[in-house]
Length: 163
Image (cartoon, rainbow, N blue to C red; front, side, top):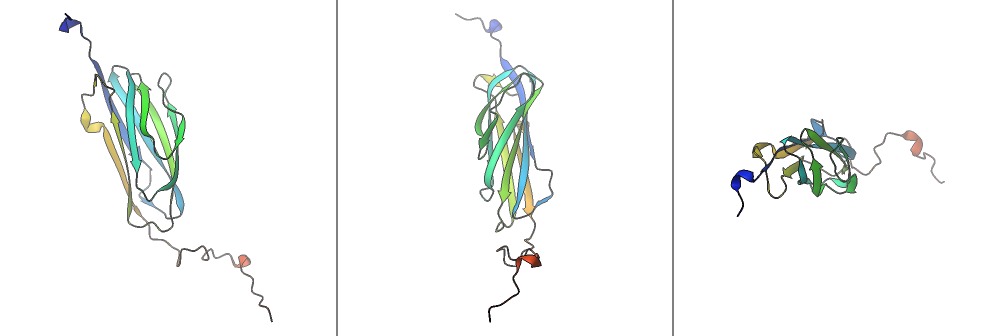
């Protein structure tokens, strides 16, 4: 029979932050989000899981991950880093950069959320910092018709007409 006084509990305060450093987004332009996952300790956490999701209006998304020395994450992927496993010693972090395109037809607002979870058997004592959301309003499109003819480049127009 085991002795509870000999059981060592794995405890790691995980935190996640998501931001694109923008107050608003411009349709037809790329946008990059940074999602940072931190293990504030005191224990190392192997197989912590990141679930990140972006507004369905965002397209052509891809991501890169850069981990602190001693930490580990999958280096890159397409879409959103969803169900990604991380290895984070105490005091380390992993930074995901997700780049997407905001379609020209997009309107309203765009939200991106990220949630991090401790691995099975581990305890995260501060659940309040395990989820983050970034929401931005979309700027009105400056295009009259949104079909690309509004470039203002007069050289692209041929002003000669057949007679």
